[in-house]
Length: 348
Length: 254
Image 1 (cartoon, each protein chain N blue to C red):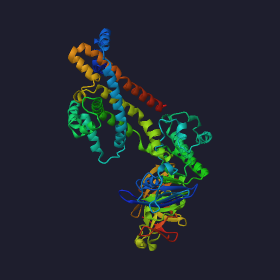
Image 2: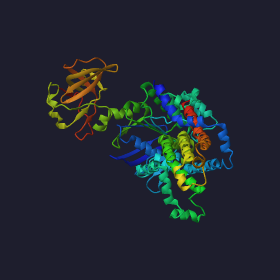
Image 3: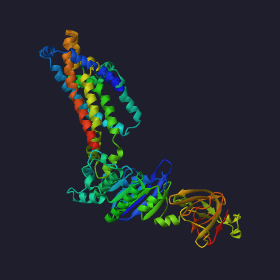
Image 4: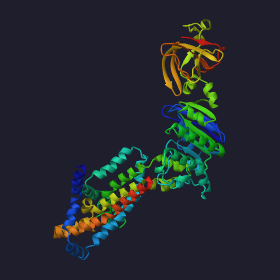
């Protein structure tokens, strides 16, 4: 179990976080660049001194700023850190890199077996300069696993790699940390990467954990409007006046309730399906291909809403009706609100 | 065309060495070097050079590491200090050393209390050589340490290495080629040190002073063989360092 309750000062704000990761559990810290994610990992690794902290790992106190104080140095923490730069020692062969940790098994049996699992069995004699980016990351991962760390910290390790390689490596890490029952924390500023890895997602912004929970739950039920913005909701549409329901050009005096619906581009269906969510009617501002489908900008009331659709929608200038599937609602204070009755409609 | 221009510049740079080789005869070398005591300056130079290198390694390496890691307050001030010594003409260093460690100075008296003297002694020769070569070593070593990514050292620590093991297993091997080159340059400077040496350590003669006095007493021709000796003695270490660095870099490339 990794338990870290940390306060660390940064230039613009203080990072305050309390995370608990069970053995084999995979936590993703997701947030924009500069939110304090890496700082948090570096405090856990013992590389940055916190203002206040209580960090325990597998029953050992690593950092305690309150008496009895403790500050275990990095070399005795048994915490593995994987960064975007694999950080292989360039003067050592792949085999020597893998076996670098003093805790690494000297017989070589585990090394050979893990090298096989990682797909680098043929590269043991090679020097790091000869490796591709993906191979170097496999060696870096193997090196941490052979050092028998009690926790694995991943600081956007695969951010610089292409998508398919990223997927392969993320799956590999998932399988290995689960098999070895190591608590692991991934830092990511891309939601898809965090979701692909984690079984729990914590959203961090300006040093504060805004929400934590199952990845799908956090994305579908953001606790605040800010979380919604961070997880990809683009467009916040006020609830329409009940009296104006269904009417075109309807008044939005219903905004008196102050409620807004968060619209996620991926949770939109073409056509009016009032039973499934919020029906939006608006003028198409722009249409462009996106992946295998289409992305349209829609003017709904005063808001621009982005929606991704499987079929090509009406061209710019025409009217389009779509349904935002079961959108989250937010009150005037930005916190999640009880959603209004189904069948709500908002028109341009 | 560019090769031709580079060739002319290269030959011009090597001109003095070529001139030396062209003007030497086996007979002149034999008669100069077989004179009684002719090889004593060579021994003096080698001994003082070795002590100088030891001092630089011992004192200059930690300073270079601290400079490279930005571990000192006001780092620019520290660097400027090292640069000042580099920019001082050797002759001026010699003059100032007299005022600093001469027999009638507090430091000189301290040295005298240890029954030593920093004037016209082996110690004075070493001190003069250290001052002439130290900035070259410190700045070169600083660049070598700066080339080692601190994250690499962090990674080694997180894998379980204590700081001294990180130094031995990661920092020094990675900075090694650069350190060797810095040391080689410092060696060449120490062996050729003349300006400061002639003022504070006229005796015992090292090779540069031997060349100077021979030139003064018996003329150009008899000084030339000693120039060759100086070249032959000063070159192997830099050459070995160069070859070793090149091999280390090649090995890293796989």
